[in-house]
Amino acid sequence: MNEQDIKKILPEWTLSYILSEKRGEKLYQAERTSGDMTKYAAVRAISIPADKEELNELRAEYPQEDEFKKKIADMMKRKKAELQLLRSFCSKPGIVCMREIYDISNSDETSYLIVARYDYIETLDSYIRSNGLTIGAALRMGIDICKGLENFRKLNMIHGNVTPENIYVNDNGRFKLGGFDIDIIEGKKPVDKDNISSLRYASPEACNGGEKVFSSDVYSLGLVLYGLLNGGKLPFENEYSQKKAFQMRISGEPIPRPAYNAGKLTDIVMKACSFDTKQRYVTPYYMRKALEEAFDELQQAVLDNKADLITQNSSPMMTFSDNKRPEKNIDDFNEKTFDEMAEKKRREKREGRKNILMSLGAMTVILLLCAAVYFGVGRSVQNYGVHLEKGYDYVYTGEKKEPEVTLKGLKEGKDYIVSYSQNTAIGTAKVTVTGIGRFRGKKTKEFEILPEACDRFEATNITDSSVTLSWDQSEHGKKYYIYIRNEETDSWDKLETVSGSQDSCSFAGLKPDTEYGFRIRAVYTTGGKEYKSKSTEVFVKTLKTGDKA
Image 1: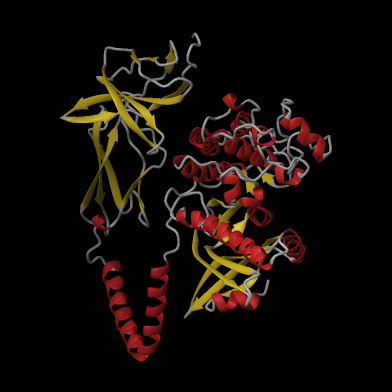
Image 2 (image 1 turned 120 degrees about the vertical axis):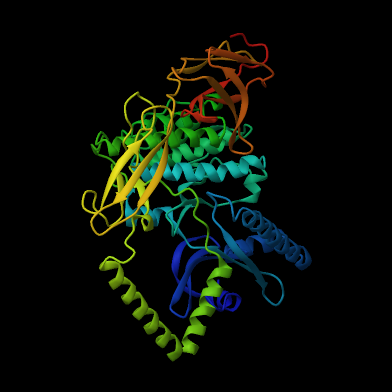
């Protein structure tokens, strides 16, 4: 594999160093500089055949030159089809984003080099060595990878190759799934039980020749998280050889809990790693929901100083602390925007002196404005954002709701005062900020006081086609909205509106042996506007056809 060949394909990019390497394949960190801007990327180089050993094997299997060339060409096309599939997922969450694919061959077409450029990614192993891994980060990793697997689920595909080596982290700290193997996805790669290293994270049904299901990917992700909680060791590997531990795992031996006690995360891992496919999360979506709930509980516990921070004697890869919840929508690097910004830098350099003079003029105006503001000209609180207390409970209690108010850079009592109105009953309350001292003007912000949620929401009388939902009534619920989970659109669809006097309802026409999610919200109407409580959810699986409740 010649780096000069890669340079010919991507002349604007400089290969910095190798991120990872395996047979016939290298992943490089690359960078491109324009003006004073630098963009980072990952470049994957794939050799076909992988090395001299594979070349000799193929020569022996296909002694005729035409047959040999055809085989090499087919291998190249197969690999490019795999990369094209990956590229189609580029805008999807939880999956590595590939921007370009190129291929070149030698003069007699007996070998190929495929080069693919990805948005910047770092291997999971490298990320953990540099940053460690918190319980919160482990939960976020699970959430992100579940989102990636959900994209496969929507196309009725199973990834089949979820391992730590195929999990990456981008420069925004988001976890991404790679390692696509089209032969595995299409079920064309036979399982080699003698090659234990390639099957360490495979589900029992995949290893035992059974049919892979969507929960097979759930199982593999559960094992990845298990290893993080167990010092890098998978079930039974603390006491037995890797081969013995593998045989015990795929034969159904109940696996022990990992060394670290990570509370709800450990419970999720154990459910995901169930030998029986029916005991696992049916699809990645349901595992993600459990992980998100665990993350929210951990975040609240940290805020309340109630989190269990006791470190067990196990893996140095885990620490028991937490930082922030993952941002929901971080756009991938925009190639067009980068080029536009680079051109802007070049234009600014050409203009040179003109820009400097313009900058000095603008700076003078800014200084004059700052002086005017400081001495009281135009100092109005209307120019400041009014921020309400994060995490404040806006659920009706009969008492006044007075969330703390802040204006960045200003002090309450010195620069402004706060007053509240309509802040006792369910409805829209107001907070008014009035400037004092050197500040003037008023600014009003509204917030909603919501009805209380239903404390209990459960499913009963479950059959193969129906279910009854019951709940504890909300004191101020004039009606209830019932929703059903739409997994295809990753959303909740309103199913029915129920009178506030009811505390149960039944639904028929469900599919047998299928998991459903239901949600209920109490609704209170005042002033012609609806105010909905926080949702309460329940997940239930219908019985198989013919089974009795």
